[in-house]
Image 1 (cartoon, rainbow, N blue to C red):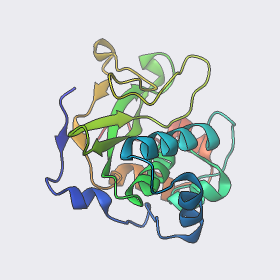
Image 2: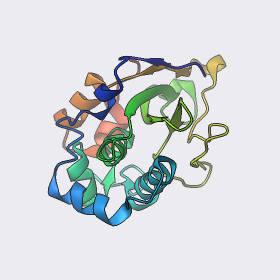
Image 3: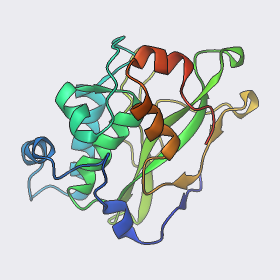
Length: 202
């Protein structure tokens, strides 16, 4: 898919944000554990991606009511929905000087259109050594979902079905979309939020 950057300045994709708080001590501690100076940007990205995908539970999968948003909270509680997990992956990679943005898909919330739609969040990472952006989805794998770190072709959690009004949005955002951030900040019951309050479109 041809992607478009919200900003032409790579430094914008390294910004520390409220939700991407990579100076927080818990993020710094993890970064020191995960990364070393000898690693390439690709090795660092793979390490960070697999950590967030595998070590941070998707809140819906574990049927938890906890709502996390800031990267530090996601790491503290080891859980979050895709919006939150994408904040943590961005924090880890931006802390290493690797430009990381936010991408979105419009997907069926469950398995049929009549059950509604939701916005799904993932990340786009710019690799200077490849001179291109790569989308990575750290949502977390389970039966029927097998997202992987791949540079050759995308291996995302979900592939959009345009015939069912699903959408791949091409824009790479500098910041998490306001709709996704506000949802996390307005709710305290993740299950209720997930079933009834996720935004349906960007």
